[in-house]
Amino acid sequence: MFLKRQLIVFALFLLCVSSISGPAQPPVGCQRRVTTVNVLDHEGNVITGLGTTAFRAESGGRPLKVLSNFEANPSRRVVIMVDVSGSTINTGDLARLLAGSLATSERKFRTAVVLFSEQIVASVDFTRPTEDVLNMLTKLPENKGRTALFDALKYAADLFGPPLPGDSVYLISDGGENRSKAKPGDIENELLTKGIRIYSFNLAGNRVFSTEEERQGPALLKDLASLTGGMALDLEMNSSKASRERVAAKLQRLYREMTDFYVLQIEPSAEFRKPQRWDLELLDSQGRKRQDVRLIYPRKLAPCLSH
Image (tube, rainbow, N blue to C red; front, side):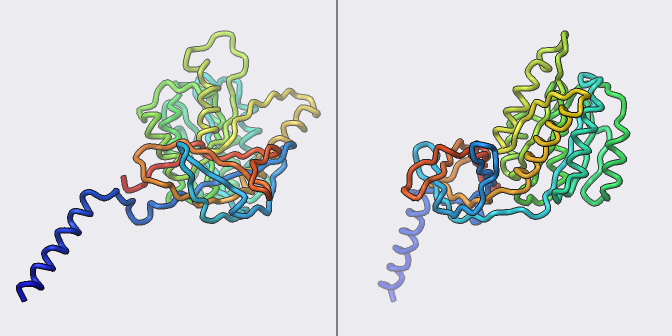
């Protein structure tokens, strides 16, 4: 009996030591990251039909496991965000055209709307019919106030509730952030963790006089799009029919990218507490990197939700 007790005590001691000195293990549910990827050819057309082995991922020189993937193109949730701050004055017609184009697209989008300046001016959530969305977009308020872009992004992210692959924000703004209480790093973490992609449209135009924040706005919009696996567009449009047709064609191509993509499950080689940069490549049948494609995906992997 004494020997049996000693063995039990010794076994418990070894278990404690291994739990202290061994490598930290990620909590259950944190081993994998789910991310969206667009694969485009040299003409910008979406490439479909790729298998899991076609993708190779790494971070910091260490390989990441690509465990599974599938193509996804059912209904997509999109929050249409329209900047109605004072710095976007005289841009209402373009904002209405861009927002209305997505809301009435043949693609299957479920839409919500957020109008913002230095605060949330008005909003419509996903439970409301398309008619309510269009009604809000046709009656944009007067442009005034400063711009709390990060606060508005936090509000929009909360509208989604539990995340779904393909959740996106359709951001129509000049990017002139100058009022938010939310910190950029916190917004970055939330967008990455929830897998929300940013598709931005620059309303800055060609102002002669602008603030430093307004001058930095286009770069901020592009950074948000690149970080989250979305896209930033600068659309030049006049009243001519040809100009409107070119813009419409670009938007329709964008809408296909928003709805047709791959969903990858990525397993990091080690757990981390801050967003980590990673690289993704597409391989040919010989295992070589393909040079004839473009991959659009979030540039950082989110840390574990439990941290």
